[in-house]
Image (cartoon, rainbow, N blue to C red; front, side, top):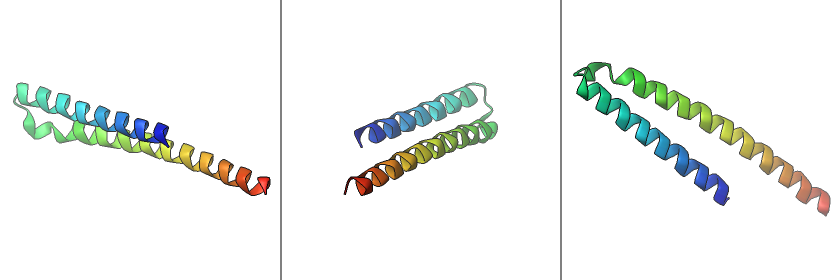
Length: 72
């Protein structure tokens, strides 16, 4: 379970840093009205990563459940 929490923290930090960098660049070039496109791209990227993580965790849980069931 600790590995899952570590990965979630890493992904959250990546998202936060990516959003801050995107906003800083947009603010620097006075193009704040276009900041939502890169922010949405970062959010969609994170959603894809989280879906992959969820599928991996689901497969691991299923494998452990079957293993526990077979051990009885």
